Image 1 (cartoon, rainbow, N blue to C red):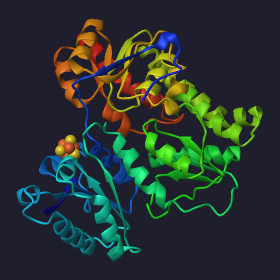
Image 2: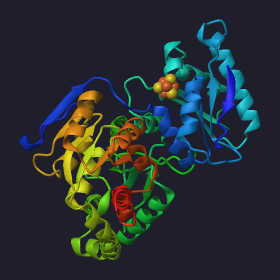
Image 3: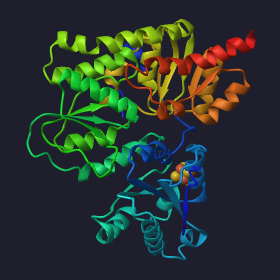
Image 4: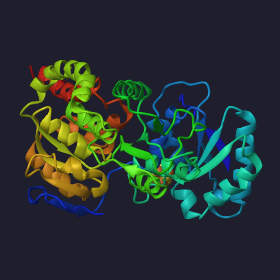
Length: 430
Ligand code: SF4
């Protein structure tokens, strides 16, 4: 086993209106694995390091997904399982301990180390939970060692964040009392977090904790008074674990677009008993700026057809935004799976009769897409290039996870992500 720091040059829909019946498909899928989450999580938690225990393929995946920016000290790397590890000739646990020793002696700034499992580590049944326990005996409290799986077997790439946050839930400190606090769950860009914090302050909502925190060592407390406001729709397991620790879920939409953000904030405001007049006053300047900024993109998008392939789990809230706030027609809204606990409010806001599909049989879905001739197709990288070659405009769904798109100030930026490829095509045609 060898340490390869990335040169970071680095179940179940129901209660749906009959108009929104779901087409369930099982077949070949085109999605990234959960390791991809490291790309945004390592930027979020600045004292954490993600050590993938995997193959060269895994190392290449996160390195290419992270792009080609140069940082002096990357916060992720891969402990490469060599042929001897895979053949059982070397003791993979001893090798892993040696790699962790090497890493932690070189990098005293690491406060939390995530051991991230992969398909190869699962195939050789390397027990990373036990490894984390063993290593914690040696390194805790200076370094806390956690583990989760980013394996691509039956997962989508955003589930990597769900698994990572889920691994942190058991170690969240219990609250001292049951007084109310708000926990915003799901990674948000720092700039978006700051905007929301200012709005919560204006509304008098607090204390507010963001999970994941900017430093993994600053874990938010949890208890009976914790109210959960979910910022990302792909955190099914994390949300259930938080609820099991006593927190209360505030069911709502997601903060995409102006209406989505207003409904999201209003849910928190209602939980704090804040009156409509104060609420409307607090959000009015942001809403007005966002309306003006969004207007120019609405003109480009209205009446255009969108087809969304299942990839990021953001598809349903995105489709709601594209239809209700940008005037787009939805041909098909595909999503890897529907968790009704987290998605019913969004589904209820889709236009009646929207075709929803869950899971994927990629060839059949491609046939439906070609036949519908949408103006824009939202899909993973693997499908985007061939579709572009066939003359179709595409938007990479992974870009929507990496970009700051939540909140009022980003509503126009989100619309622009869809308007830009259409505008480029129009100009090329002229
Ligand atoms: Fe490929 Fe599995 Fe490694 Fe992901 S975890 S890069 S799917 S081998």
